[in-house]
Length: 349
Image 1 (cartoon, rainbow, N blue to C red):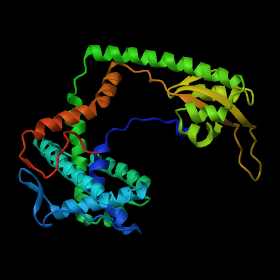
Image 2: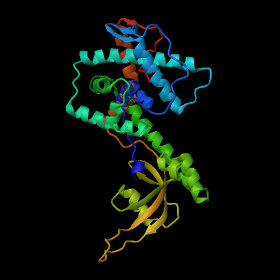
Image 3: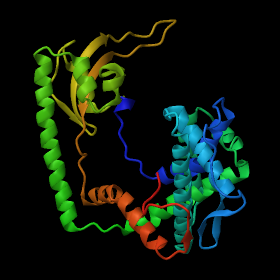
Image 4: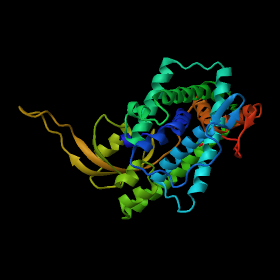
C-alpha cells in the first residue's frame, strides 16, 4: 500500500534545481560520457559574462556550467548532429538566467533576514540525498566530493539553495492572498471532482464486471503507480497495514470478484482479491503467520476532505510558482543587470 501514498512536496524544488545546476551535471563528467561535440564560445574566460549589481559570472564559469549541462542532457536526450553549437548556446543562456535569478533572490532573502535553522538544514540534506540517489545513484558525500567546481563550492551552492527555499517558505508563501471567494470556489471544485470521479469509478467497475481486462484498465486509468507498473497489483496485504475501509473490503470480498467502490483518504478504489493466504499458528520451529491477501486495485484520486485552513494552505501552494515569479520580476527591475543573452522573467528550470 506504500505505492498509494500521494503527497504534494513543493518545498525543496528550488534547492534541487539551483544546486543541481551547478553540481549534478558536473558529476557526470566523472563518468565515461564523451565531451560535447561543440565547444563553448565567448570572449576571454576571465572576462565578465553576466553581472548583477556587483556580482559577476565570468565566461569561464558560464562555459563550465554550459558544458556540464550539455553532458548531462546528452545522457538522456539525443542531440541532433550539426546542432551541437545551437544546443551549447542554449545552455549558456540557461546558466546566465539561473545566475541572475539566484543572485537576485538571494539578495531578497538576505534583506528579509532569512535564517536557516539546524532543522531546516537537516531536512534539506535529507531531500538532497534522496534526489541525488534517485537521479545519480550515489551518496550525497560522493556527489559533493566529485563536483567539478570543488567540494567547498558545492557545499556553498547547497547552503545558498537552502536559504532560498527557506525564504520562499517563510516570506513569499505566507504572503499569498487567499479570499473567502477563493475558498468557496475550491470547496465547490472539490465536490465536483469527487462526484465526477465517483461516476468514473462506477463506470470502470461495470466494465470490469462485464469482463474487460483488469490489468489493461488499471494501466490506463489508475492513478496509483501500480497501474502502470504491475497492472494494479499491490502485492500481499496483512491486517493493520492499510486504511481500514480498504482492508475490510480486501478481507471480505470473494476471490477474483470485483467489489463495490471503496473510498479512503487516498481516493476511490476498485478492488480485486487475487490470492488468499490463511493464518497459520506458531509451531516449535516457525513463528505464526497472519492471514493475508494479495490484491489489485484501480485508484481514482479525489480531493481529501479539508477544512478552511487546509484549503487555504493548498491554494497557497498551488499559487506559489506564480508568486515567486512575480517577486523575482519586481526585484529584478530594481537591479543593474548586464547579460549577452535575452533573459526570461521567471524562475529558471
